[in-house]
Image (cartoon, rainbow, N blue to C red; front, side, top):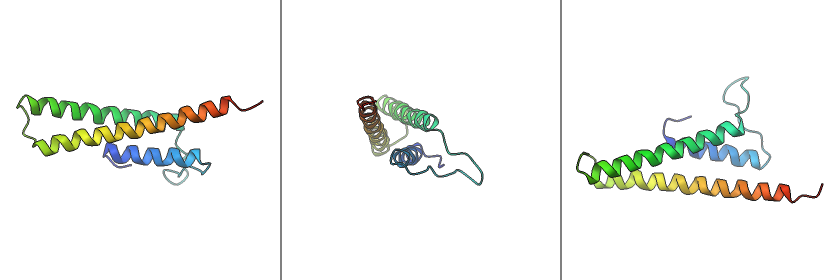
Length: 107
């Protein structure tokens, strides 16, 4: 995976979407096992949290004048963090919907 947290989140969400649609997850390499759903979800949440923390630190350092970043860079970082959070909220909502649907299935 890439080192960019947003690209990692995007890739993890794509894999989770494929897994939810019943398609097999792509293997990481020759002979490797498919990634565990729990690990993918945990890593995605970690990446979103990290993006939020970095954006908050940049905003705080910019507002106190301790940063050499431009306003555009700070705003871009904040928007990337917001976008990743909105994506994670959408994934959570879909997981909750799927759980409710499964629990309402007749046995």
